[in-house]
Length: 115
Length: 115
Image 1 (cartoon, rainbow over the protein chains, first blue to last red):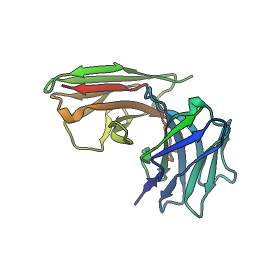
Image 2 (cartoon, rainbow over the protein chains, first blue to last red):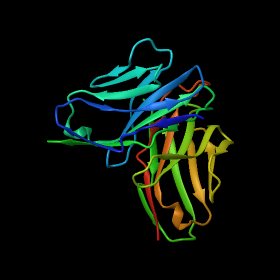
Image 3 (cartoon, each protein chain N blue to C red):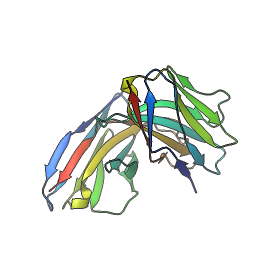
Image 4 (cartoon, rainbow over the protein chains, first blue to last red):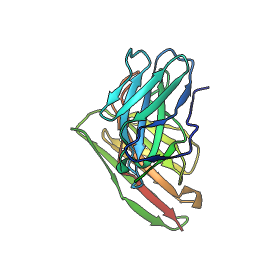
């Protein structure tokens, strides 16, 4: 079964520290995409970063990077030099090849950055 | 650039009343369109998705329906709201491709409270 697991329901991190949000996935499809989204308390869902299953390098977008370990089926999000504005819910999602345009979503991790 | 508009931002409705939430996308053609619901503190639940006009798939049987009267317009409706329909509703769009490596982009959401 296609599934996304985020094992950390909540995390507290000191400002300016790096933080890693865990995401593991389960699929038998050889081709798939992995996404991370941020949802602040205001509610909008913001796309952060994408990793394709055949991408040779880990994706990076500014302070965000994706630690993609295909053999372990993990796609952890790393935020460097955390800021107070990083406090939000973070969702990992997957699009298997036969997903018919759908995303499979994890339950999310609530990240709180402490000043 | 592409933008997505969703309204209203908040809505308070009595049980048994009808519902109409609207979403429009600008700056792209033939987008895939999605309606999600999010309960407080929970992940996203896909309600409907559409890959074209008059092509709408329902993921969860319920008293909600969706329509796509125009290419870039997606409407979520109900004839009679239930208390369980309360939640945060998000509209999203993505670029059309058989392999969905395109991220979904979300509107600002509608907070629906049923009294």
